[in-house]
Image 1 (spheres, one colour):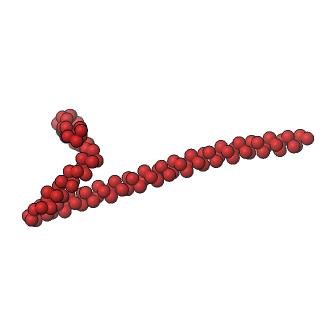
Image 2 (cartoon, helix red, strand yellow):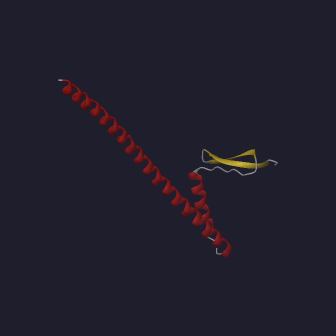
Image 3 (tube, helix red, strand yellow):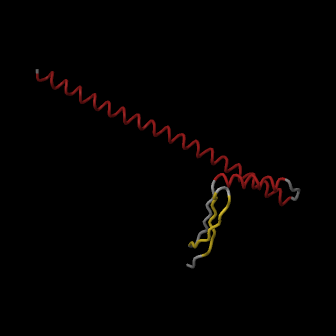
Length: 117
């Protein structure tokens, strides 16, 4: 399988840089989230000003992409909050388990001492 030339894009101080690279067989494009959101807003604004039906269809698709991106971002944020809460709950459960073990050890020691007397 022959390699093909593709370009990877990334933001450097709000400017765009394109780096040529070789990959097998898929294309790679990595863009910062803020840049993607900005580009989607530009597309919606640009296509929204035209009256041509083709541009209206593109404007609608760009708007749908922007909406989908926003929903995905909200879902990821919500998931991150849930994971943070789960981490706290797990830490509390571990703390509680360790305290219970210490208490059980102490109570067993008291029982052993009272049984020997």
